[in-house]
Image 1 (cartoon, rainbow, N blue to C red):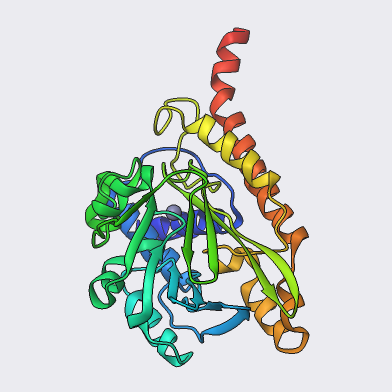
Image 2 (image 1 turned 135 degrees about the horizontal axis):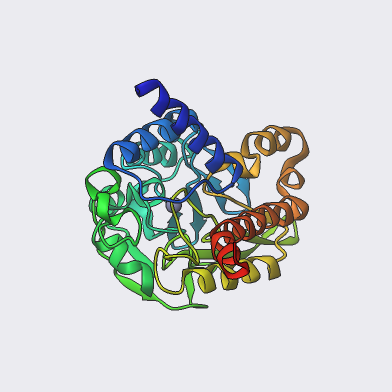
Length: 313
Ligand SMILES: [Zn+2]
């Protein structure tokens, strides 16, 4: 029984990893618990990682599997994503290791309010007084610790996290500025209602690079888009989000799930190649194309029974 569940979970984790969808149905609490444990273990969400400078004012302070990004500005620090609830102290340690003080974290952001990206928000906010800025339609998710999430909210005991009060409510296209760094918030809903893609321009070595932190286009196991949709309008949200992500042409891009952006490979190459190792417009195009394919595949699957009955026996 347990072995069967393990195989199922391994398949789910693999599907998630590959960005594929799996047969849709509600997950049980036990399945959610085992899924979270399996994903965390196989994708190394809770293993500490060495922090590293990436480009200009941008540093990596995440775990082996999860991206957390630190912008150092003339007026303090901006932290984008806080990983799992266990990641807070790891991120804190990474920031200190780089020679910065977590007391200088002024602004706390996330791509979306799930346990693996906003899990450490409350920790960072409480200890260091950072102000949380979030997309209007993601505020409830952050402030309820995931309880208002359209999909995982019904299993908040397993998939919830410590709530973090939002100090600044953002709308699509709003900018977050601190010192000499300006980040633009694009509302890219689907994965959550308030998922946010962050973009910015960074100058390094006299050259300007466009950066994107795409979010919102990934479909998790169990989500439904068209046939008994997970929330009204989810299909249109994904369509608009994928279109928007397809329109972006970043030089450098980041995924909060590091394996999707070959973080380790780029990091290794950067030791000899420098900033150019992070430049990857083709990788971004492929990443969004994979999400687009997963969306169309799931639409086909969900619409197949309806088509059959329309065609008759
Ligand atoms: Zn998520």
